[in-house]
Image (tube, rainbow, N blue to C red):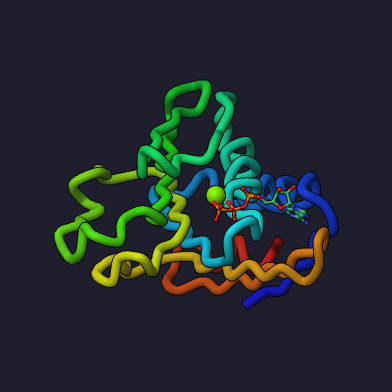
Amino acid sequence: MKIKHTYSPEETEFLGYELGLLLKDEYKVVILLDGDLGSGKTTFTKGIARGIGVTDIVNSPTYTILKKYHTKDYRKVLYHLDLYRLDHVGDDFDLEEYIDGQGMIVVEWPYKVSEFMPKDYLLVNIKKVSDTEREFILTCVGIPCKRAVQYI
Ligand SMILES: Nc1ncnc2c1ncn2[C@@H]1O[C@H](COP(=O)(O)OP(=O)(O)OP(=O)(O)O)[C@@H](O)[C@H]1O
Ligand SMILES: [Mg+2]
């Protein structure tokens, strides 16, 4: 487990960027972002995307549930999910229907879908400490993120 603090959106994006850099060579990583509205999940995701080499602009997928991005060299895929509006989908939601074998998968509001819990994942709890301060608690469950959490 690792605890980090940021004091501006730019710092949050940079923290995500560092995490992206540390994880960019992993075959598959699932990152679960848990935090209140406006805590910084999407801001953090923008940084992760940049860290793994996505050059397109990453925006909140709230109205589409899922957005898919490629790195500039097309070697890596980023899936950005926002499950906030999935209340009524119930247990039918199956991540595997949306996502194939590999890539970086970032999920906002992962607990909206009770069924959804991969075996290996990096859990990031984000807390609003003040208007501008955020606390990040990073917990790695499984193998692929151990090194990243150690070095970030
Ligand atoms: N240290 C900080 N880190 C991140 N965002 C911050 C910080 N301080 C202030 N903010 C503000 O908090 C908001 C974070 O918005 P963001 O869309 O990233 O949150 P979110 O968790 O994705 O929200 P939602 O649940 O609606 O998807 C922005 O308005 C940003 O300017
Ligand atoms: Mg968001």
